Length: 126
Image 1 (cartoon, helix red, strand yellow):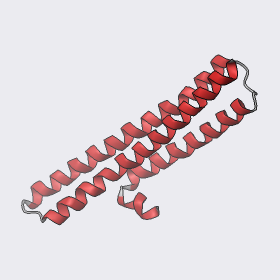
Image 2 (cartoon, rainbow, N blue to C red; image 1 turned 90 degrees about the horizontal axis):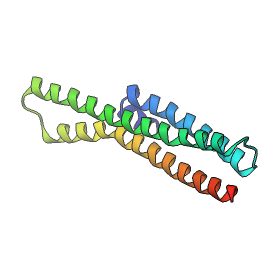
Image 3 (cartoon, one colour; image 1 turned 180 degrees about the vertical axis):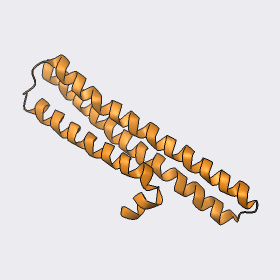
């Protein structure tokens, strides 16, 4: 996992890891309140549950931004070198896609958690 983070560029993967940890805390906190029925109002818990998907979207867009920056830097290097081997080009594309995959994984986790908590909230209110 450490190599995955290093290869993807610590500038983008470390903030994504912080976003993931914040989201995990939010998911567990909201799930514990929801399953223990310790929330003050339905509107309040709904708002807190919606933070999960918003943070997931931030992770997805930050990952996409990381890929765009990586591709831009890669194309600048290609322009300077003029002649690049295909394996170097392929490795560059793979490396630039790591933040996007990481952000997408965080978004999928966020979306599934948000969906399950929404379903639980609907069942609890009936």
